[in-house]
Image (cartoon, rainbow, N blue to C red; front, side, top):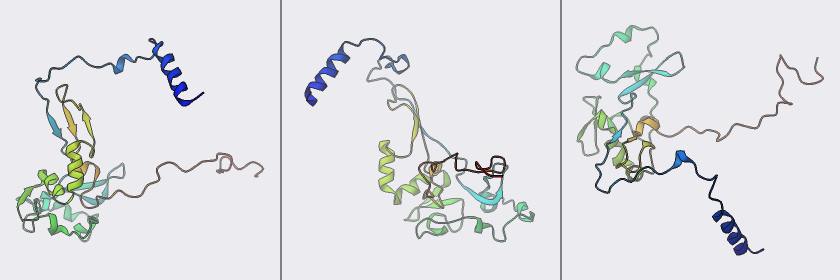
Length: 204
């Protein structure tokens, strides 16, 4: 049987199957007019934005962050410096691995709670995506087109709203590259594994 004949036979068989292939949960929604109002697109505001990790961890082992404005804001609170767990130099807890950049490349040297573009224009920390976009143009282009960054909600904004991720939802600003990981768990052979509770067969 040739490929063309097999394809024709398959289409003929499927054309006679009207039942059992429809999933009601995947039905199209009601029609929406072309001039329907557009719903909002909101970019998530990460809680880690403007926060520096410390060597101190919480119960789950995650670093406890300190807001930059704690020390660099208009009313700094340096009470944490009396803690015996404080680092000798606080900023040694910041692992900066972002190309050849240094702190002053992105942060204003006079006010660390402010960012600045390459031309010196100041940005609030909430506008960090504008800063990211000036160097990562390809990624920002793809983000605007919806193929980078991830989102939840509706493609068709006439049907519902859309929530989008922020750059630092996925990329730590100081160390944006993903750490190498294995794509899958390594193979496991339960017959070759031994534990104190279950020694290998023949063991004493």
